[in-house]
Every structure is written in C-alpha cells, then in structure tokens.
Image (cartoon, rainbow, N blue to C red; front, side, top):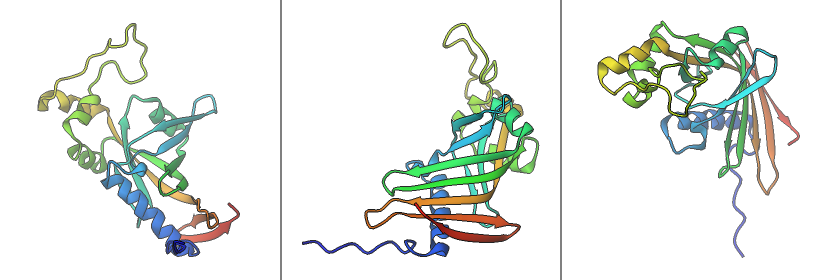
Amino acid sequence: MSERQAPPSFYNDLEETLAESWRLIARGVADRRSAFHHPTVATIGSDGGPRLRTVILRGCDPAGRLLRFHTDLRSEKVAEITREPRVALHFYNPEAKIQLRLDGEASLNADSPVADLAWAGSRVFSRQCYGIEPGPGSKIVEAGAFALPDTTDDATAAGRANFCAVTIRITRLEWLYLANTGHRRADFLWEGEIVRGQWLVP
C-alpha cells in the first residue's frame, strides 16, 4: 500500500498560501504553458452588466500588488475601465486544482513610461495587431475585411498609438485549493498596506 503524500507547505498556513498565490501568478508571466498565463478579466459594461474576456498576463509585481496586461485603446474594455476602474480576475490551474479570484483597480497606461517599456518588450506579431484597421470590435461585412499591417518596423510602429498597458492594483485575493485530503479556501484583504488573511469554509 502506498504511503499517503504529505500535504503541501501552504495547506494549513495562511502566509504560505498567499506566497504560493503570488508565485503561481508570477510563473504565469514567465511561462506560456502555465495555466495562469491567460486569466479571465471581468469589467462592467455600459449597460451595467458584467463583461468577461481572456487576456495574456504580461507583468506581475507582488511587492506592489500589480498585474499587467496589454490591450488596444479602441477596445470596449478600455471604455469600460474608464467608466469603472474596479475589475476582477479569475485564474484556474486544473492540474494543481488551484483557483484564484482577485479584485482590484485598473489603470490605463497609454502615453507613459510604463507603456513605452511594455511596447519595447512586445514581439513584432503583438505590435502588428495594434495596427489593424478598423479597430477591434468594429462591424465588417466579411470575416477577413480588415487591414493587417506588415511586420516592418515602420508599419508596426503605427500601432503604438493604439497600444495600452493596463495595470491592476490588487485589493483582495481569494484562494481555493481542491484536495482529497480536504479543500482549503482563504481570503486576503488589503487595508492600505496591511493584509488580513482569513480561512473560509470551502
């Protein structure tokens, strides 16, 4: 009979649970194969209803509680964040059986050092997408009726005017770990720079 595997270090430890959350998120930035590389972001639409979309996680600063993704200034999510900067994110790793739900306040960075640095670090293919005409979400008569610029530096540079780096300062993080030894759920709320952790019933 096989021995029962020891629980992970975060299993009954709030501090280690929060640290593991940030480790997983940071790995999502660096590793394209990570399930945390493409979280779901929720905004509030102009009609007051929720709007969901998958984004690519581009930056994580645990010390500053900041996450970053990129988008087109012409997109609906930019208009939604302008009206209501409060957003939510959802991460799930089916192999680790870990879910994170985060709340935060989004900031739009278009003409700023943050955006300049993010643009400089973007691949040519990504830059190309920001030069598409007409803008994302525009109605077209045929599936391919839009213009995609070529990959030359001059052509992709035109897309810089449409590029936006969205940063989200996290104010709350909820953790759920599914395990046959017993699930674990925890909530972390920041009040200023103070974080308060609390176990929850799964």
